[in-house]
Length: 348
Ligand code: PEP
Ligand code: MN
Image 1 (tube, rainbow, N blue to C red):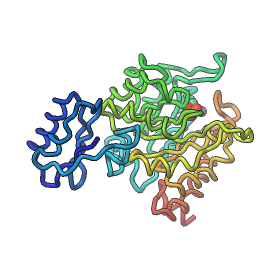
Image 2 (image 1 turned 90 degrees about the vertical axis):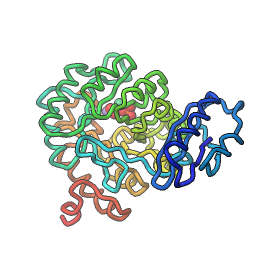
Image 3 (image 1 turned 60 degrees about the horizontal axis):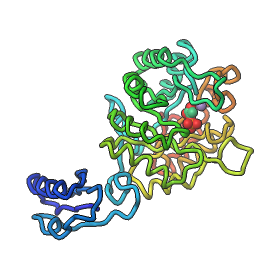
Image 4 (image 1 turned 135 degrees about the horizontal axis):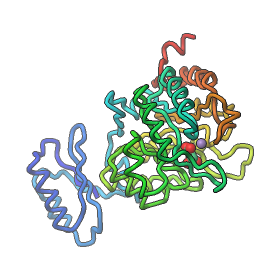
């Protein structure tokens, strides 16, 4: 349930309600909105005397949270979450589309530095690149691990781009977080609950990919695990789901984007590369995702896709990536958003 305070409630009155909530064995989460404070109360509510809370000074009302996810729900937090990325505080979830680009996997120092420079020149906020790869086959390239993280760190220092990289298990969260600005939880790990708790505790922004066969509700429940650790910096990433269609690698679920945004305050990123498995589909799917309300794009870019150690067929060359951004710009403008370098791109 949510306790809604009256607009002029003092900190002391808020603290009084929080203390009451604790007396009933519930966990609280205080959310200060633009005009009022609400207190989300989480836990077993059977023993709660709602009247005692409702009659506390400056309490306006108690509202039940109907959704099974609580903190992720728009019912609890009406203001959309903007995740402020890096010292420049780029607001992911604001009007500018946050673009994160880079290879599927970090392969060597020269490759990641070259891609980082190109991503920077294109106006990206983040550089992606896997150092720990969740491959379907144990015989495929598994990533450069710590060496790869160090190469990402070098690219960050040179370009200022924020690093987005995947962490595969709870034991490695601390190490990966030391080199990373946004921790990625991959589709295959969406319901690895101990990993979700650990990335929640890291305090770092988290990009939570939708599981290959996860419903919208399961995806939001997974986000709830991270939020329950008091980490509100969660972005959802729609990366396609398994369907009967085999002409694409997965099916980008466009409808999940507006739905997630209707149910939750969390920003939503679209990944047109893993969903389609084809670089040719990345631009049209990016346009569709932006039109549907996506707050960001995650794009695989490789200077020689044919030689990529991982996901070459869905990787764009830097030239194709630039073209993608050009064709996305007018769509973004049509829905009152903008992509990096938008004005220049629209005029061209
Ligand atoms: C990736 O982003 O490289 C990746 C493995 O994605 P997903 O978890 O969506 O398959
Ligand atoms: Mn990939």
